[in-house]
Image (cartoon, rainbow, N blue to C red):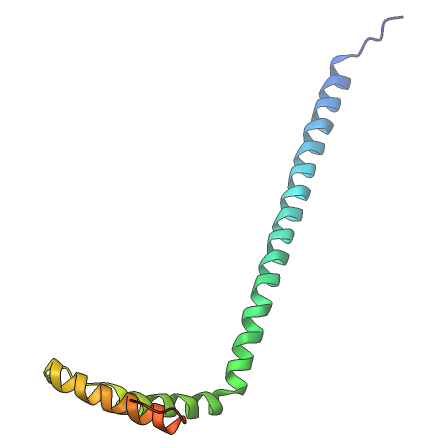
Length: 106
């Protein structure tokens, strides 16, 4: 038994097949696009949480920054000093810190 299809049946079948492939392509395209957006949202959430934490603790961070800057000005040495003067000042500072910590320097 041979199945014969006339020309109009072939044209309609090919048109429906092409239409199905186009619809399937667009459905998959939007599905993958949605998935990439979901992945991007998952990577943004921790960053947003960190930023909100920084905003909430901005006052404490400013206080800590001020303390660090004051420590830096006490411990940093000017570039215009010669190396011998800087070394002597550094050695004196280290001795003071060690003595304040309860160590004996000999």
